[in-house]
Length: 392
Image 1 (cartoon, rainbow, N blue to C red):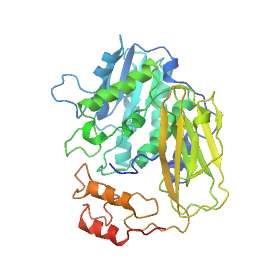
Image 2 (tube, rainbow, N blue to C red):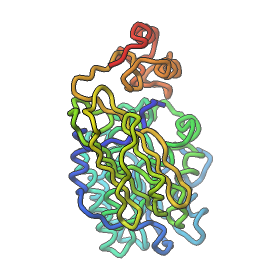
Image 3 (cartoon, one colour):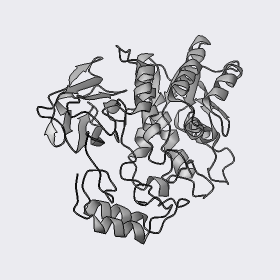
Image 4 (cartoon, rainbow, N blue to C red):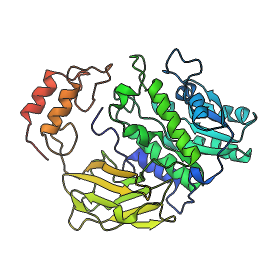
């Protein structure tokens, strides 16, 4: 797995900026999934991941919907997943599904939009319209983030666009007072994620769960429907973006965190920018949202690292890297696999983990493929060794 695979980004990055505009920056209405009565009859709506592709072939009813029924007493879940579907196609068929009996819609779709180059504005608009139509039909809509894409996926292998979409879906759910289910957060923090929870077929170039993966996905959905809060505060806005370049030295760092269950323990929240703590965040939305707007006391330079720690009142903790960006004039040395501004042992370890892997391998790491040959090999190692110790 690429070391910077799950770094949320938005703000200066063009795609993320468009997503931020699409979901607005104004006041939002918060509604945790657990505050509503547990539904009794849901439509699981989505693509091949909802349909259950990659599941245990011996299982009669694949996917997360039958497992979700097992985890929520009395719940009926109809699987309405269609393989390969994009959100424009989902929007075209949503009314047919909503005409069926039921009282809720579980909406998880958009990974094929990323693969097909559909704009983030279009994806978000379509998801909003599908959820709105469900509400108009008297069904409770739940938005779900997507699961991470494989590190050797043909498009977005480092989950940059996927994370943008996850943040936008979170903002949309809060803005519209809808329930949120967050597989992206839960899956992305699992050790050996792609080895233990994903289908192993080489023909899968996006990423589908295997049996244990669908078990985990069903648990994430069940926890949200039952109001069991196992997810920490999550980032919903980051600026400058992870991976952004040519960032002005006087840039203001903007970070927003939200919790969709318990309130955030504001005193626990610490944002670090290049190792220096930012001032305390401003809480709102009854303590479920924190905002930082930090103007560093001296101009930024080189590669800037952002990390955050925040926990909710239930003890769920988010404590990791948010992202890195390059200030105007910064030049990343070749061999700096993790893009932290220096070629060090951490880069060597990451290259070693991917050594010998080509683009069809789950071990492939596009950032470790320094020369872009399609394989992590001795040429990449030689480049790293030649630049070892170099920095911006």
